Image 1 (cartoon, rainbow, N blue to C red):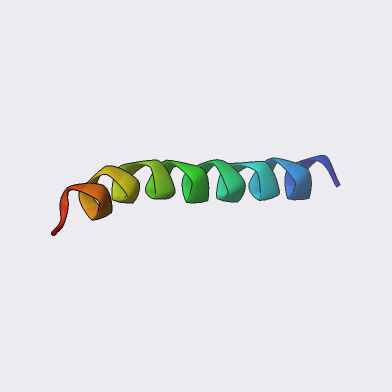
Image 2: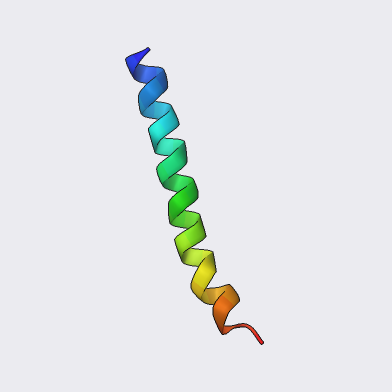
Length: 30
């Protein structure tokens, strides 16, 4: 269970990181 939770948190963090990286790019796009 602990491992599954770790993976879930990792996926959530990765998703948030990708969103943070794409947000500025989308904002800068015309």
